[in-house]
Image 1: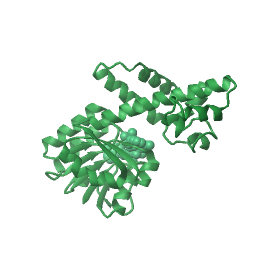
Image 2: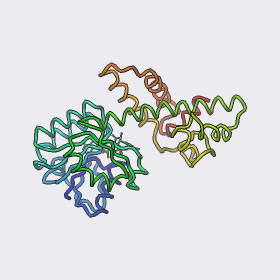
Image 3: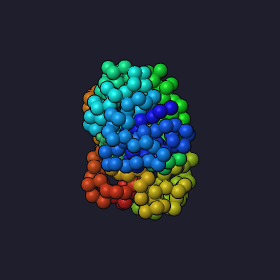
Image 4: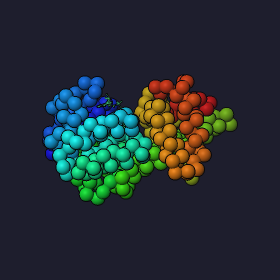
Length: 284
Ligand code: NAD
């Protein structure tokens, strides 16, 4: 396929590289002038989007997504599929779908889970929203860039799934940190708590796979000085998106709200530039 790729940052560049490796013809554009080996370089987002079978965006936020879509939808070829993999607010995702539809394009919101490591290894999970036709057109590309793609529903459903998942993750990580910090004060070793929790009703990804205590459980950022991994700033971004979405539909998310406050304070202080599991040090 001929693919335009807009936004070649930490995530976009390795995703584009995997598409090239699989034999696709990629034209890239990034305002910062970043290039990817093997891709043709466009001089603008509109140029990257012009004449392609698929156009993928991997951008920082909803405001930038809206401005890029305003520029590229008119350049898209009728019937081509526009896939946005950025994490953005649900309203911006839906606005992007509307712009695409008004220009005769298929579109999918497809945020990812798996981070920079998953982008490089081609093992991302895609959470997708859009029509069946749009999803099935995008699916072969998801297969290259990821290991799983879930079609969650109509326009915006991918972003909705992403923020619900990450709100739960933020809450569960704080819970894991609280439990290990309390155990320490009670004189209980972290290893003993891990051995119990990881096979008991408190088990969860934040404990079993990504334990916030060094030397316990599988390798995680805790074993690497809390170097991200998944940066606290990105967790805060997703928590804020969850609260924005909750407010827009009058959903009660008291734990999500508290997790947002805690990560807000953490990122403003000692958490900046660190993995989100370093929250345990703040709680200690
Ligand atoms: P990044 O900041 O490294 O990359 C974003 C890129 O977009 C930058 O290179 C920037 O120059 C470019 N850009 C900004 N405005 C542009 C424009 N108008 N036109 C073209 N390019 C433009 O961010 P990232 O870590 O690659 O994340 C991208 C998206 O993926 C974000 O929405 C993020 O929330 C999401 N995400 C990131 C991770 C992660 O671990 N990094 C994990 C899951 C999801």
